[in-house]
Length: 382
Ligand SMILES: *Cc1c(COP(=O)(O)O)cnc(C)c1O
Image (cartoon, rainbow, N blue to C red; front, side, top):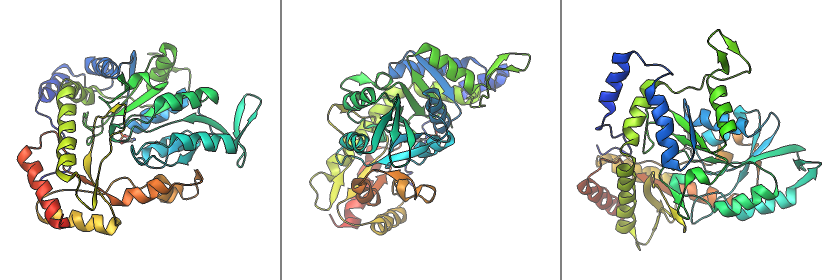
């Protein structure tokens, strides 16, 4: 079986894990946690990193750190992994769902502008969503598969409306926008090290940023807000710590980040070349001005729906190839059926059930890629 996306653990992972056990530093204190924070911040071009137990808890903490409170609303794209929306709700807030742009699969910037113009009003220094009376508290774009939206324009909107910018960059480590690393594009940027991401720690996350005071506060909140070793805590904190065991894997992975990201880009290039110009198939997009980390790759069926995708996946499975559909938009998910949305979400609604993700592990061989492409073409009669 050629898997969809499996971790590549052939570097220093084993040695570093043994070090954790030999030194008994298996928990949330240890050299690897510190090293991983430094390495991730450096890779993202940011000053500081705060490790978290997952990308989701990192997003939750980042939103709170930027002042998102109970009863607020936060602008996010509907086309994302559900964790983006969940993190908003974990703050007691609600998502305001926007559509995406066809050529990047990232949040529609013009729509954010239009929705804010038409549907909000200033009450003193508070930006209020007219229909619900709720306070609009932040914008959280998603760097879909490593694709970055036009952050210069989003930053202009955020400045105009005094909204903090938090980036869900879960799988975007290694991406750049206009030559800038991701740690420089938003107030806070959140990475995931989940098992299916390009760089994994088994599980885990990281907030990167440049505001020293805020980053210290986030570290404090993530580690139970402990002031002294005598069980003294000054806030209601969280146990969102990453363990040294996870960070040991993470550090070994980060040592190979360039190699992994290069391979992910080669896989994208392979599939896009293999399916370019074929009738009935569209390619995964890479927007202008963005050098994408190309987390996942695959194809988009020009016509059809989830049944066609399922059928293709079944046929591929019969040929020893694992493949899968991709994110079902947030507004179609049971817990978010009543969520606040922009006037139209057509692009996301029409796109999601035509996407097929194809094998893209960093250890996949050219022979395997050729076999996958050949099978897909055979099944679809391209
Ligand atoms: C993976 C992912 C997350 C969640 O990260 P976890 O570490 O699994 O909690 C959030 N948002 C996006 C866009 C993701 O791809």
